[in-house]
Image: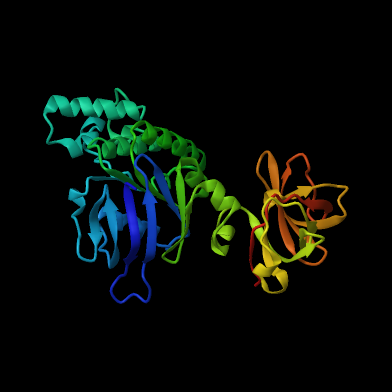
Length: 354
């Protein structure tokens, strides 16, 4: 692994609990990792510890095989060869784009420095912009200048702390795809912090979900969504609810009894012995519920959110349980209307009953 974080703990003096608690993760050279989680979960503190801006209480941080952070070793930030892209871009308003981008490579001979500035500006799609000033650029262009400046010194690792949070939603998602392409073209290894799931899915090779200082899961997006390791990950990623269920074995076949009826023929399902009396909570995603007028199970629409091509319906079953469903937007039903639904679940994700 190019970046290795082992049992890392960051604890502030007088704090009741660690800001980062026993976090371990690895990032291969050329990969993009993303840390995601609610505000105050420790993701930015972890990023700052990797950068050398926060002291390590215990555990260690290795970069290209070298220990750069531990309780005994604290390599200064400037000696780690790490580039950073901040939330507010931190461009110098009195310097033009060329001098902003060349700021971190001022020690190079002029011709070499100018050639590198041209190279990274071309990489971010801003070739020929050297003489422009930050105030003449859009937010997305300023963010690309900040990225070019961070890439110019050829850092070992690039850290990005919520770099798109000041941009509008549509631009954020588009720029996330662009930045991923730029980082891949530059063969850069990067660790990215965001609170936005769509950004994380768009940019990350591996995504880590943090909560209260702990890393709950470090995995690819598909696995986070379909095979969440903890109840928190299941609840945080995507749209879904937990429904009471009972696992049973009948005639050699596993059956899951749910408020929506029985689930059968799943590709994956835990054995009934995994839970006391087979009783558990099953995760039902919005895409596990299909609108079907002929289905025997009916549910009342209590909330609807228009998403363009689809609605996200919040539905209440006759027994009082709530489920979510993605429904094509031409099925425009009214609040209070009862519609038929059926489960279409490929594999079952279960947790201890609450």
